Amino acid sequence: MTYPMTDEDRAIQEKARRFVDEELIPHELEAEMNAGQLPRDVIERQQAKLRELGLWSINMPRDLGGTELTSFQQVLVSEQIGRVTNGLGWVLHTGPEWAVGVFTADQVDRYLKPMVAGDKRECYAITEPNAGSDVDAIEATARREGGDYLLNGTKWHVTSFNKAEVVFFQAKLAGGPKAGSHALFIVDIPSEGLRMVRAPAYSHTYADQHAILEFEDVRVPAANLIGDEGGGMDFTYAWFRYERLMIAARCCGAAERLIEEATAFAKERVQFGQPIMSYQAIQHMLADSLTELWAARLMTYRLGREIDEGVDLKVQHAHCSMAKLYASEMANRVADRAVQIFGGRGYMRENVAERFYRELRVDRIWEGTSEIQRNIIADQLAKRGAGTLAG
Image (cartoon, rainbow, N blue to C red; front, side, top):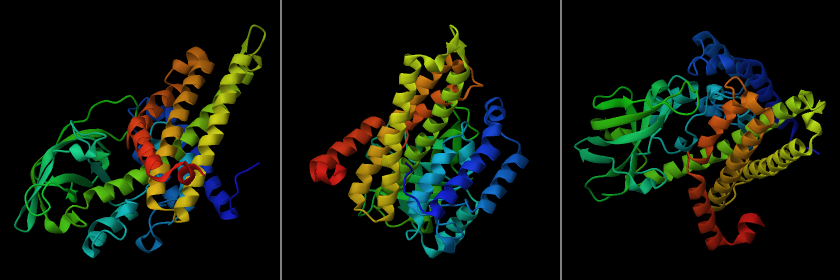
Protein backbone atom coordinates (compact mmCIF):
# COMPACT_ATOMS: atom_id res chain seq x y z
CA MET A 1 0.00 0.00 0.00
CA THR A 2 1.34 3.45 -0.91
CA TYR A 3 0.19 6.92 0.07
CA PRO A 4 -1.98 8.44 -2.70
CA MET A 5 0.10 10.82 -4.81
CA THR A 6 -0.03 12.24 -8.31
CA ASP A 7 2.56 11.29 -10.90
CA GLU A 8 4.06 14.76 -10.43
CA ASP A 9 4.35 14.21 -6.67
CA ARG A 10 6.16 10.91 -7.16
CA ALA A 11 8.49 12.38 -9.76
CA ILE A 12 9.47 15.17 -7.36
CA GLN A 13 9.97 12.67 -4.54
CA GLU A 14 12.16 10.47 -6.74
CA LYS A 15 14.26 13.42 -7.94
CA ALA A 16 14.91 14.47 -4.35
CA ARG A 17 15.75 10.91 -3.28
CA ARG A 18 18.16 10.43 -6.15
CA PHE A 19 19.85 13.76 -5.41
CA VAL A 20 20.38 12.78 -1.76
CA ASP A 21 21.69 9.32 -2.66
CA GLU A 22 24.05 10.51 -5.38
CA GLU A 23 25.14 14.00 -4.31
CA LEU A 24 24.91 14.18 -0.51
CA ILE A 25 25.22 10.83 1.29
CA PRO A 26 28.61 10.03 -0.33
CA HIS A 27 30.05 13.14 1.39
CA GLU A 28 28.83 12.47 4.94
CA LEU A 29 32.07 11.06 6.33
CA GLU A 30 34.14 13.74 4.61
CA ALA A 31 32.00 16.40 6.27
CA GLU A 32 32.05 14.66 9.66
CA MET A 33 35.83 14.57 9.73
CA ASN A 34 36.23 18.17 8.47
CA ALA A 35 34.03 20.21 10.82
CA GLY A 36 31.08 19.84 8.47
CA GLN A 37 32.89 21.53 5.61
CA LEU A 38 32.91 20.41 1.98
CA PRO A 39 35.04 21.86 -0.84
CA ARG A 40 33.52 24.88 -2.58
CA ASP A 41 33.39 23.10 -5.96
CA VAL A 42 31.37 20.24 -4.43
CA ILE A 43 28.81 22.65 -2.99
CA GLU A 44 28.57 24.55 -6.26
CA ARG A 45 27.97 21.30 -8.13
CA GLN A 46 25.23 20.35 -5.68
CA GLN A 47 23.57 23.75 -6.03
CA ALA A 48 23.71 23.55 -9.81
CA LYS A 49 22.15 20.07 -9.69
CA LEU A 50 19.31 21.31 -7.49
CA ARG A 51 18.55 24.09 -9.96
CA GLU A 52 18.67 21.62 -12.83
CA LEU A 53 16.21 19.34 -11.02
CA GLY A 54 13.82 22.19 -10.24
CA LEU A 55 14.43 21.85 -6.49
CA TRP A 56 15.74 25.35 -5.80
CA SER A 57 13.66 27.71 -3.63
CA ILE A 58 10.90 25.13 -3.58
CA ASN A 59 8.71 27.19 -1.23
CA MET A 60 8.88 30.48 -3.12
CA PRO A 61 6.59 31.84 -5.88
CA ARG A 62 7.55 31.40 -9.51
CA ASP A 63 7.23 35.12 -10.20
CA LEU A 64 10.06 35.68 -7.72
CA GLY A 65 12.20 32.92 -9.22
CA GLY A 66 11.12 30.03 -7.03
CA THR A 67 9.79 26.58 -7.90
CA GLU A 68 6.52 27.07 -5.95
CA LEU A 69 5.92 23.46 -4.98
CA THR A 70 2.83 22.65 -2.98
CA SER A 71 3.22 22.20 0.78
CA PHE A 72 2.76 18.47 0.31
CA GLN A 73 5.48 18.35 -2.34
CA GLN A 74 7.79 20.35 -0.07
CA VAL A 75 7.20 17.73 2.61
CA LEU A 76 8.22 15.01 0.16
CA VAL A 77 11.44 16.85 -0.69
CA SER A 78 12.31 17.69 2.93
CA GLU A 79 11.70 14.10 3.95
CA GLN A 80 14.36 12.94 1.52
CA ILE A 81 16.71 15.69 2.68
CA GLY A 82 16.27 14.31 6.20
CA ARG A 83 17.93 11.06 5.13
CA VAL A 84 21.39 12.67 5.10
CA THR A 85 23.52 13.64 8.11
CA ASN A 86 25.87 16.53 8.87
CA GLY A 87 23.50 19.25 7.70
CA LEU A 88 24.45 18.51 4.09
CA GLY A 89 20.79 18.77 3.16
CA TRP A 90 20.91 22.47 4.01
CA VAL A 91 22.31 23.02 0.53
CA LEU A 92 18.63 22.83 -0.46
CA HIS A 93 17.69 26.49 -0.47
CA THR A 94 14.34 27.66 0.90
CA GLY A 95 13.58 31.33 1.37
CA PRO A 96 11.37 33.13 3.92
CA GLU A 97 7.97 32.10 2.57
CA TRP A 98 6.23 34.20 5.22
CA ALA A 99 7.70 37.35 3.64
CA VAL A 100 5.65 37.00 0.47
CA GLY A 101 2.90 39.61 0.56
CA VAL A 102 4.52 41.18 3.63
CA PHE A 103 7.68 42.78 2.26
CA THR A 104 7.36 46.16 0.57
CA ALA A 105 8.20 46.42 -3.13
CA ASP A 106 11.58 47.89 -2.16
CA GLN A 107 12.27 45.04 0.28
CA VAL A 108 11.30 42.50 -2.37
CA ASP A 109 13.79 43.98 -4.84
CA ARG A 110 16.63 44.52 -2.35
CA TYR A 111 16.25 41.37 -0.28
CA LEU A 112 13.61 38.82 -1.21
CA LYS A 113 14.50 38.30 -4.87
CA PRO A 114 18.23 37.90 -4.06
CA MET A 115 17.28 35.41 -1.33
CA VAL A 116 15.21 33.38 -3.76
CA ALA A 117 18.06 33.43 -6.27
CA GLY A 118 20.55 32.34 -3.61
CA ASP A 119 22.58 35.54 -3.82
CA LYS A 120 21.68 36.43 -0.24
CA ARG A 121 21.16 34.09 2.69
CA GLU A 122 19.16 34.98 5.77
CA CYS A 123 19.37 34.01 9.42
CA TYR A 124 17.09 34.67 12.39
CA ALA A 125 18.06 36.53 15.58
CA ILE A 126 15.17 35.74 17.91
CA THR A 127 16.34 33.63 20.89
CA GLU A 128 18.08 35.38 23.80
CA PRO A 129 19.85 34.25 26.98
CA ASN A 130 16.63 34.77 28.98
CA ALA A 131 14.11 34.16 26.20
CA GLY A 132 13.93 30.82 24.44
CA SER A 133 10.57 29.12 24.23
CA ASP A 134 9.01 32.22 25.78
CA VAL A 135 9.57 34.52 22.82
CA ASP A 136 7.59 37.33 24.48
CA ALA A 137 10.33 37.52 27.14
CA ILE A 138 12.86 38.99 24.72
CA GLU A 139 14.71 42.04 26.01
CA ALA A 140 16.10 43.34 22.71
CA THR A 141 14.81 46.79 21.86
CA ALA A 142 14.14 48.93 18.81
CA ARG A 143 13.88 52.71 19.36
CA ARG A 144 12.73 55.07 16.62
CA GLU A 145 15.13 57.94 15.98
CA GLY A 146 14.09 60.15 13.11
CA GLY A 147 14.01 58.10 9.95
CA ASP A 148 15.87 55.18 11.55
CA TYR A 149 15.61 52.61 14.31
CA LEU A 150 18.35 51.87 16.82
CA LEU A 151 18.55 48.15 17.64
CA ASN A 152 20.05 46.79 20.85
CA GLY A 153 20.22 43.34 22.38
CA THR A 154 22.01 40.01 22.65
CA LYS A 155 20.87 37.06 20.53
CA TRP A 156 21.73 33.37 20.88
CA HIS A 157 21.63 30.36 18.56
CA VAL A 158 21.60 32.49 15.39
CA THR A 159 21.79 29.59 12.96
CA SER A 160 23.80 30.08 9.76
CA PHE A 161 25.06 33.56 10.71
CA ASN A 162 28.47 32.63 9.29
CA LYS A 163 26.90 32.06 5.87
CA ALA A 164 24.36 34.89 5.85
CA GLU A 165 24.22 38.36 4.36
CA VAL A 166 20.99 39.32 6.13
CA VAL A 167 19.72 38.81 9.68
CA PHE A 168 16.09 39.13 10.77
CA PHE A 169 16.18 40.82 14.18
CA GLN A 170 13.21 40.61 16.55
CA ALA A 171 12.82 43.29 19.19
CA LYS A 172 10.35 45.04 21.44
CA LEU A 173 9.58 48.64 20.60
CA ALA A 174 10.94 51.18 23.06
CA GLY A 175 8.74 54.26 23.13
CA GLY A 176 5.94 55.34 20.84
CA PRO A 177 2.31 54.23 20.71
CA LYS A 178 3.28 50.55 20.20
CA ALA A 179 5.84 50.45 23.02
CA GLY A 180 6.40 46.94 24.32
CA SER A 181 5.03 45.20 21.25
CA HIS A 182 7.15 43.16 18.84
CA ALA A 183 8.73 44.31 15.60
CA LEU A 184 10.92 42.52 13.08
CA PHE A 185 13.72 44.19 11.14
CA ILE A 186 16.04 43.44 8.23
CA VAL A 187 19.68 44.01 9.15
CA ASP A 188 22.50 43.81 6.64
CA ILE A 189 25.62 41.83 7.48
CA PRO A 190 27.94 43.52 8.24
CA SER A 191 26.44 46.53 10.01
CA GLU A 192 28.10 48.96 12.37
CA GLY A 193 27.40 47.90 15.95
CA LEU A 194 26.70 44.26 15.04
CA ARG A 195 29.34 41.82 16.24
CA MET A 196 29.63 38.10 16.77
CA VAL A 197 30.53 37.36 20.38
CA ARG A 198 31.39 33.74 19.66
CA ALA A 199 30.26 30.62 17.82
CA PRO A 200 29.79 27.83 20.42
CA ALA A 201 30.48 24.21 19.53
CA TYR A 202 27.40 21.98 19.37
CA SER A 203 26.77 18.24 19.40
CA HIS A 204 26.38 18.00 15.64
CA THR A 205 29.08 18.53 13.03
CA TYR A 206 27.60 21.18 10.74
CA ALA A 207 29.26 23.81 8.59
CA ASP A 208 26.55 26.27 9.68
CA GLN A 209 27.39 27.88 12.99
CA HIS A 210 24.91 29.00 15.67
CA ALA A 211 26.36 32.32 16.74
CA ILE A 212 25.90 34.56 19.76
CA LEU A 213 25.45 38.12 18.48
CA GLU A 214 25.60 41.53 20.12
CA PHE A 215 23.60 44.41 18.65
CA GLU A 216 24.78 47.77 20.04
CA ASP A 217 23.01 50.81 18.59
CA VAL A 218 22.74 49.14 15.20
CA ARG A 219 21.09 51.76 12.99
CA VAL A 220 18.69 50.59 10.31
CA PRO A 221 16.41 52.74 8.15
CA ALA A 222 12.68 52.69 8.84
CA ALA A 223 12.37 51.11 5.38
CA ASN A 224 13.85 47.94 6.94
CA LEU A 225 10.94 47.46 9.33
CA ILE A 226 9.01 44.37 8.21
CA GLY A 227 5.27 45.00 8.10
CA ASP A 228 3.91 47.29 10.80
CA GLU A 229 5.10 48.09 14.28
CA GLY A 230 3.63 45.46 16.56
CA GLY A 231 3.38 42.77 13.88
CA GLY A 232 6.64 40.96 14.58
CA MET A 233 5.14 37.95 16.33
CA ASP A 234 2.79 37.19 13.43
CA PHE A 235 5.74 36.65 11.11
CA THR A 236 7.60 34.60 13.71
CA TYR A 237 4.60 32.32 14.20
CA ALA A 238 4.33 31.81 10.42
CA TRP A 239 8.02 30.89 10.31
CA PHE A 240 7.58 28.52 13.25
CA ARG A 241 4.68 26.72 11.54
CA TYR A 242 6.70 26.15 8.39
CA GLU A 243 9.82 25.03 10.22
CA ARG A 244 7.88 22.66 12.48
CA LEU A 245 6.32 20.96 9.46
CA MET A 246 9.66 20.59 7.72
CA ILE A 247 11.35 19.29 10.89
CA ALA A 248 8.67 16.61 11.05
CA ALA A 249 9.33 15.71 7.42
CA ARG A 250 13.09 15.54 7.89
CA CYS A 251 12.66 13.37 10.99
CA CYS A 252 10.64 10.89 8.92
CA GLY A 253 13.45 10.75 6.39
CA ALA A 254 16.06 10.22 9.10
CA ALA A 255 14.02 7.41 10.66
CA GLU A 256 13.63 5.68 7.31
CA ARG A 257 17.38 5.81 6.69
CA LEU A 258 18.12 4.46 10.16
CA ILE A 259 15.63 1.61 9.79
CA GLU A 260 17.06 0.66 6.41
CA GLU A 261 20.67 0.74 7.63
CA ALA A 262 19.93 -1.11 10.88
CA THR A 263 17.89 -3.78 9.08
CA ALA A 264 20.63 -4.39 6.53
CA PHE A 265 23.20 -4.71 9.31
CA ALA A 266 20.98 -7.04 11.35
CA LYS A 267 20.63 -9.38 8.38
CA GLU A 268 24.40 -9.60 7.92
CA ARG A 269 25.69 -9.52 11.49
CA VAL A 270 26.11 -13.06 12.82
CA GLN A 271 26.28 -13.77 16.55
CA PHE A 272 25.99 -17.18 18.23
CA GLY A 273 25.77 -18.80 14.81
CA GLN A 274 22.91 -16.83 13.28
CA PRO A 275 22.09 -13.32 11.99
CA ILE A 276 20.95 -11.06 14.79
CA MET A 277 17.84 -10.30 12.73
CA SER A 278 16.57 -13.71 13.84
CA TYR A 279 16.53 -12.64 17.50
CA GLN A 280 13.22 -11.35 18.78
CA ALA A 281 14.82 -8.49 20.69
CA ILE A 282 16.20 -7.04 17.45
CA GLN A 283 12.99 -7.77 15.57
CA HIS A 284 10.92 -5.87 18.13
CA MET A 285 13.15 -2.79 17.99
CA LEU A 286 12.84 -2.67 14.22
CA ALA A 287 9.11 -3.40 14.29
CA ASP A 288 8.47 -0.59 16.77
CA SER A 289 10.59 1.77 14.69
CA LEU A 290 8.78 0.98 11.46
CA THR A 291 5.36 1.31 13.09
CA GLU A 292 6.19 4.70 14.55
CA LEU A 293 7.63 5.90 11.23
CA TRP A 294 4.42 4.97 9.43
CA ALA A 295 2.34 6.89 11.97
CA ALA A 296 4.59 9.98 11.80
CA ARG A 297 4.67 9.92 8.02
CA LEU A 298 0.89 9.71 7.70
CA MET A 299 0.50 12.60 10.13
CA THR A 300 3.08 14.74 8.33
CA TYR A 301 1.77 13.98 4.84
CA ARG A 302 -1.79 14.78 5.89
CA LEU A 303 -0.66 18.08 7.41
CA GLY A 304 1.04 19.06 4.15
CA ARG A 305 -2.18 18.30 2.29
CA GLU A 306 -4.38 20.29 4.67
CA ILE A 307 -2.17 23.35 4.36
CA ASP A 308 -2.65 23.17 0.58
CA GLU A 309 -6.38 22.85 1.19
CA GLY A 310 -6.43 26.03 3.28
CA VAL A 311 -7.48 24.54 6.61
CA ASP A 312 -8.09 27.08 9.41
CA LEU A 313 -4.80 28.67 10.53
CA LYS A 314 -5.34 27.83 14.21
CA VAL A 315 -5.87 24.18 13.33
CA GLN A 316 -2.71 24.26 11.20
CA HIS A 317 -0.83 25.76 14.15
CA ALA A 318 -1.92 22.90 16.40
CA HIS A 319 -1.25 20.24 13.78
CA CYS A 320 2.24 21.62 13.07
CA SER A 321 2.97 21.26 16.78
CA MET A 322 1.51 17.73 16.83
CA ALA A 323 3.55 16.61 13.82
CA LYS A 324 6.77 18.18 15.10
CA LEU A 325 6.27 16.72 18.56
CA TYR A 326 5.53 13.19 17.45
CA ALA A 327 7.99 12.95 14.55
CA SER A 328 10.93 14.42 16.46
CA GLU A 329 10.42 12.15 19.47
CA MET A 330 9.83 9.16 17.17
CA ALA A 331 13.09 9.80 15.29
CA ASN A 332 15.03 10.04 18.55
CA ARG A 333 13.65 6.68 19.67
CA VAL A 334 14.54 5.14 16.33
CA ALA A 335 18.09 6.53 16.53
CA ASP A 336 18.54 5.12 20.03
CA ARG A 337 17.39 1.67 18.88
CA ALA A 338 19.64 1.83 15.81
CA VAL A 339 22.70 2.56 17.97
CA GLN A 340 21.78 -0.43 20.12
CA ILE A 341 21.40 -2.71 17.10
CA PHE A 342 24.77 -1.66 15.70
CA GLY A 343 26.37 -2.19 19.11
CA GLY A 344 29.90 -0.82 19.36
CA ARG A 345 29.81 0.21 15.72
CA GLY A 346 26.83 2.40 16.53
CA TYR A 347 29.03 4.49 18.82
CA MET A 348 31.57 5.30 16.09
CA ARG A 349 31.36 8.66 14.35
CA GLU A 350 31.72 6.93 10.99
CA ASN A 351 28.41 5.18 11.61
CA VAL A 352 25.18 6.83 10.44
CA ALA A 353 23.38 5.86 13.66
CA GLU A 354 25.91 7.65 15.85
CA ARG A 355 25.63 10.84 13.80
CA PHE A 356 21.84 10.83 13.78
CA TYR A 357 21.83 10.04 17.51
CA ARG A 358 23.57 13.38 18.08
CA GLU A 359 21.90 15.37 15.34
CA LEU A 360 18.26 14.46 15.92
CA ARG A 361 18.35 15.48 19.57
CA VAL A 362 18.00 19.16 18.73
CA ASP A 363 14.75 18.55 16.86
CA ARG A 364 13.07 18.18 20.25
CA ILE A 365 14.37 21.65 21.19
CA TRP A 366 14.59 24.17 18.35
CA GLU A 367 11.55 25.90 16.86
CA GLY A 368 9.81 25.16 20.16
CA THR A 369 10.64 22.39 22.63
CA SER A 370 8.51 19.26 22.94
CA GLU A 371 7.07 20.72 26.11
CA ILE A 372 6.03 23.92 24.33
CA GLN A 373 4.42 21.87 21.55
CA ARG A 374 2.39 20.03 24.19
CA ASN A 375 1.28 23.36 25.66
CA ILE A 376 0.13 24.57 22.23
CA ILE A 377 -1.71 21.32 21.54
CA ALA A 378 -3.44 21.32 24.93
CA ASP A 379 -4.47 24.95 24.51
CA GLN A 380 -6.01 24.26 21.11
CA LEU A 381 -7.69 21.12 22.47
CA ALA A 382 -9.36 23.19 25.20
CA LYS A 383 -10.52 25.78 22.66
CA ARG A 384 -11.55 23.56 19.75
CA GLY A 385 -12.10 20.03 21.03
CA ALA A 386 -10.73 16.66 20.00
CA GLY A 387 -13.12 16.31 17.10
CA THR A 388 -11.70 19.37 15.35
CA LEU A 389 -8.06 18.44 15.84
CA ALA A 390 -8.21 14.65 15.47
CA GLY A 391 -11.62 13.96 13.99
